[in-house]
Image 1 (cartoon, helix red, strand yellow):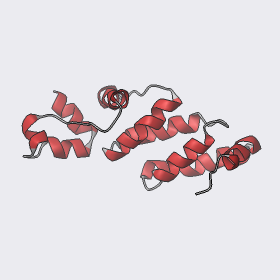
Image 2 (spheres, rainbow, N blue to C red):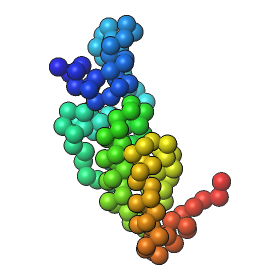
Image 3 (cartoon, one colour):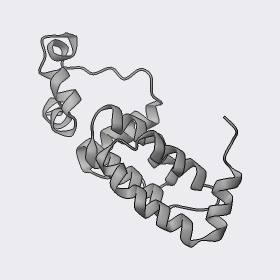
Image 4 (cartoon, one colour):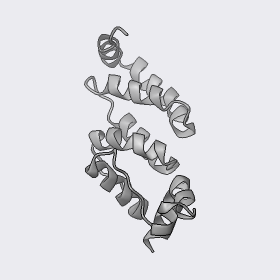
Length: 134
């Protein structure tokens, strides 16, 4: 059943679907403030535990995964970002890791990210050059 899959994937969704509010009564969740492709990727993960391997997908999905408390998906996104550290992506990854640093899975990966960056002078220089004045 669709409801059971969604409830199992996210504690937030479970609470909404089991409530007496509209989501629970109608058995319908509306996610209107996200790109449909991102929502589709999150739903695919809920059913299959698979995430497209592209770096941009991980970046796009991370926020929704965090919002809906999908720890496994947050971890998968963070790992995909770590697997894709390049001079072009290093600043984006640093930013994402900082935004979601309070999440346990992201916090665990922060030291790995730092090790990757400090071992490669090119990555470190790229990260520093991409920092913008506040």
